[in-house]
Length: 150
Image (cartoon, one colour):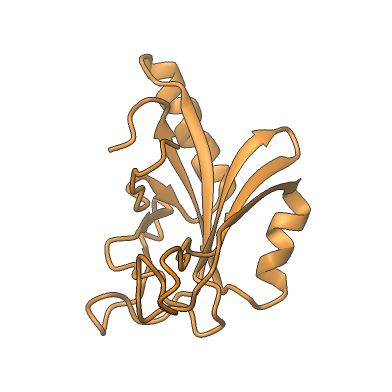
């Protein structure tokens, strides 16, 4: 992803297999080099205060991320994972909210904890283990066309 872009999960699916099928469809349709990524998060009440962060269309597997607010009572807001190899995922964890000016408040979200985002490459199993340990309770798999980050 390009620094400074906001990808809010516009083309997301409930499972990795569904997202892979969509990526194959987009690649076959032409004009798209699909990038597969996942968002792990805490699915509770979304940004409107009443709708869940994510809703799923059961027949299609399409995930509706319109209400996602990235808040998590466990402290870690979300993980982004991008498939970078057959069994490798580049993981960007946490919200990037540094205190560069030293005022004791996060620069991006003053009410949120001060934290630095880290990026590591892990196995797909290690990435999915984050779901099993209870840090997050929801995961979606998303597809975007390389170069089209809108």
